[in-house]
Length: 393
Image (cartoon, rainbow, N blue to C red; front, top):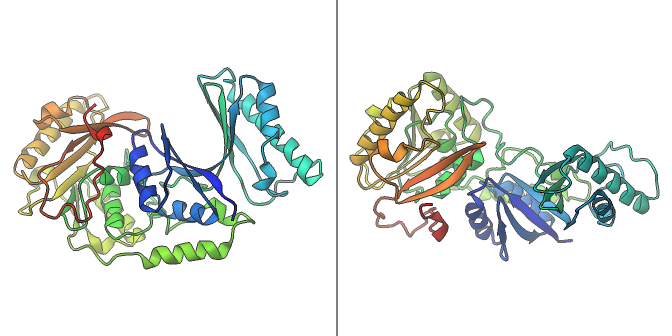
């Protein structure tokens, strides 16, 4: 099988999580950059990584990278790349682009130049002058950063956050990939109680159940590369079958999700059912002030209101104070909170031992991590990422 340079893209701040996921899948010699993890793989690896990566946004094939200070260099060096190794004669190959701190900053013109260059390259290989583009799709992206052009082909299609279980979402939903990243940055495992007291659309609860059950996040959807003529369909079926065989039995502890909105709870239950984990989660209409537990060593992971809109600030501050009061009664629990509210620690009542800058959509947030004491068996399968980078910024 031919080997490719692959790139798993991710939200800024989750690169370590994605690299740990790749290491768990058996990949080595990873190169971690801002928002990207580079590694090597073949056809089967493209299928496995699309199927199993929980916190990555997309999986790309890197076709080439070069200096592109002007349109002449961009065109000529794009022509020289081996496009016919990837793109069949009848393929659709739309070109998207972006430019950061580069002299070629007119993105539509960059996209047009790359499209023409790819056509010119394919003309030489296929000895024809016209391409109908009626076959499978091979989306190309040209990314310019400080005059360096990176050209890639997307293997995923829809972003990897599209698991297939969430048809509807409430206001300000948390992406599935971000939710999985938050959970993997905590010290939760399937033997500990997991609670989201502000569960909204239920994404954190569903992702926790899928992690606890070892359900592949891509098992309920298809991927663009499945339709590529040089991909073996039997291999994709084998990867799906392997993922199904690796599922674990039901959770020993039910995952708990609470919210004050009955309509949100109905959405949560529908999502859990679509994801195949409805038997692992208990959703309930409940205010944060009503939460209590006699369990030891539980974990709270939540995405509470941020108070971004005028008039919401006092209400949100009261919510944070109430969350702090509840957590004071749970001294052996770990608490993990993502919010853009810069005064969270003040109202919660404690400074976080660790915090990490993340982006929820385009909104800059902090992930406040109150680890709590280690339970007796934390070493037996904890999901926490304990790295130097995880210290307060």
